[in-house]
Image (cartoon, rainbow, N blue to C red; front, side, top):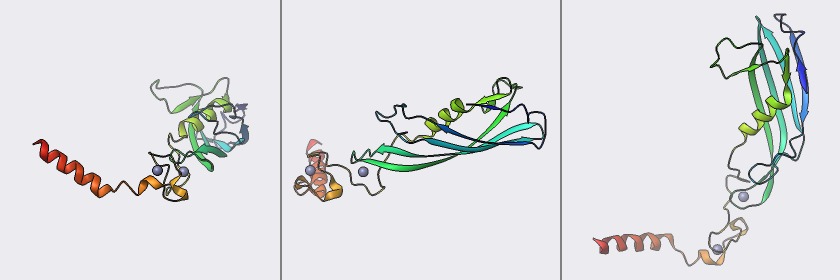
Amino acid sequence: MRLDLRTIIHRPGAELPFEHTLDLSQVDLFEACPFAHPVHIHGMVRNRAGALELKAVVDTTLELVCDRCLKPFRQEMELPVEHLLAETLEQEEDDDILLLEDGQLDLDEVFTTDVILAMEPKHVCSEDCKGLCPKCGADLNEGPCRCKADVDPRLAVLAQLLDKESDD
Ligand SMILES: [Zn+2]
Ligand SMILES: [Zn+2]
């Protein structure tokens, strides 16, 4: 959807609220489709002394897979977004300003970029997630596995230290 800002571009103090829903269900990220639910956007563009300022909040429910225990889980996403908009760039190196085309802003393009760049590369179902045993693959959240008993971390450290000494 294109948001037409021509009615407020030359009117300092003018405001234009907007709502939009993105369908990102086809977006493949981290070998999964995290955007199974609609992505809602509520925002407002304000003309502040001739400069256009966009403020919005993006919210959706993400379908993620835990990096530690590999279980799927859901997480709410609420992302505040701010941009400055302009019809022309005065300084070419200013990447933070979004350019309008014919006084319009492509909401799909802007918010798809914002949402994807805001995604964390790692996800855990809970900060306390114990993950899977690297040896047998058991889910350690459901209790200790059998191989845990035979690896004593103190003995492993001792063995390493003693090994080093005998090398010298
Ligand atoms: Zn987990
Ligand atoms: Zn194990």
